[in-house]
Amino acid sequence: MGKAYVGKADYMAAVRALDKAQALTREPYPLISLVKGHALLALKQYPEAMAELEAFLQKAPSDPQSATARQMLSQAKAFAARQ
Image (tube, rainbow, N blue to C red; front, side, top):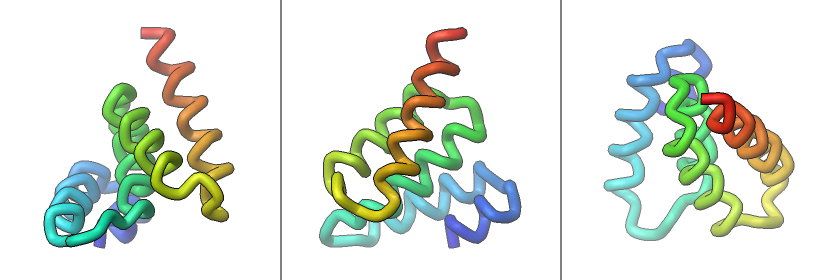
């Protein structure tokens, strides 16, 4: 559901849905952190986005999406440095 909200650019709803998904999982599901990082980046919540993206990269460093996560993390760091 969170991914669908990101696709609709409803980032706050995406974060709420992803928070709920994280709460319901027994084992970590790294892709939740990736999508949540994307939503937080769009909301300009850079420190939180960086934390989620770093969590994703820590849990799944060789995931096919890790290159995308590294690029998003770089963007978040650049935006945070400008503030």
